[in-house]
Length: 239
Image (cartoon, rainbow, N blue to C red):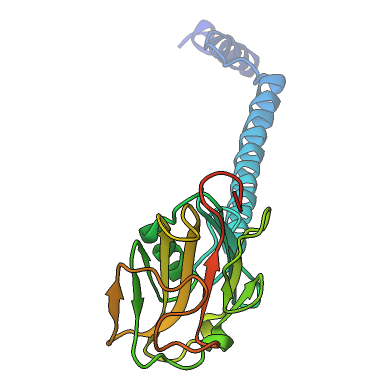
């Protein structure tokens, strides 16, 4: 081997360096790009958390409104008002219900019966007929009070809408409220309307298409056993 066959250490290092320099090297990472990607990921995470928070608050508000009855009608026995052309029924906070009758409008018996039931008052409501029991159940005066006061208001009063307040908690077991509504077509009060209220025995009663005496109560019912309201026919009350 001659001197050209041997390489010095410097030549070896130089050759190695030249070889390495020929290998393609990756570019240094772009620091700004990395930071931008990190910021984007943080924004996405914050948006997701905020979305969950808003959804949670909305769900909480919806639950609260539902529990307080804001999103729906008042439950049976709760406070509320039902209005129709023929009557207004208000459920009071003390558990009673106040019925105000509109002059000039015949009651819709199915609607009134359903609405009374909604507020915990078992009732049988009829138009053109009236149901009674013999003997009359006791306790009516504890169940119903009226304005104008009294068991009968045979003289119609201008501008006055008959109102009765009913306490379902005072109703004796096995009874229901009987409501009969008539538009009188003959006699002294022809053209007027008459509504009578008594208690009946749910399992024993009869119904008649003859209106009770406008100046009194049905046969078998005493002064404290019912209310008869005469409240004006079509047009202004008392016309």
